[in-house]
Image (tube, rainbow, N blue to C red; front, side, top):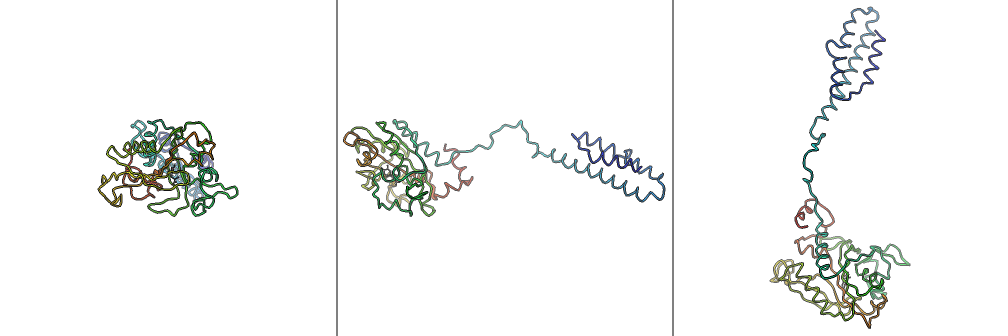
Length: 338
Ligand code: DAH
């Protein structure tokens, strides 16, 4: 009897059912009323009295083992039968669609507005040297933007930094030397700013550059007027205020009439009726020359705008940090805006 118990024990321990039927066969063979274990219990009567104690222990162990095995595989069977573990592969897919990030939506819209009038898209590196980010753009050596306070430097001497604006792409395109130039350059820029509802250390800009013979400020105005009407609506008005940038001369800031109140005054436009959306101007001849373009033959205009700012205006978003937190409840609101 002892040998029989040992043999069954080995068989039970090795048992792994392939399916529910195999498990049921196992139950019938070992654990049913007429099964092998019940048979051994029946034979127990014939065991010599002095062996009964030992044999009783072994028999009970065998029964527990078989029951344990049964329970173990039954549990797995239960899980397999549960609806979560067995997805219905015949169901239609795509019930949970994603959406574009609001910044991507606006960037794509701006790209397509400028593409329609012949601008192409250029890109440049996010890690820049001093020449492309500052020097070629006519920044004087002591300009505060070159300071550690504003710029994330990766190394000093030579100065390598995260670009602080997409104006660096202007330099790269002009250096390449294929004229005329009519490009826009969207991309990420980096500044050492404390993060708040109105400022972030990473944000996005779109740069524009047009270089050809006889380019004038009137061309700049007309192009930006077209852009403002396409982007904010046909009733939008624009105005230019004199400004200063090292890389443009003449320089200006452009405002659009507030698209929330239509110009009558509200919180968004601080009751002025106007919202500043970009810097622009005629490319400074020093910049053309630094990039190898003859400024006695060619002239150009440039502009640069922050994508976050106009996205906030367009969708009435009041906190810049929302763009970077990627909270699904925020992002879901733009699914339809594509
Ligand atoms: N680079 C400027 C900035 O980051 C924006 C800018 C202003 C770009 C005037 C231009 C421009 O191309 O002409 O603040």
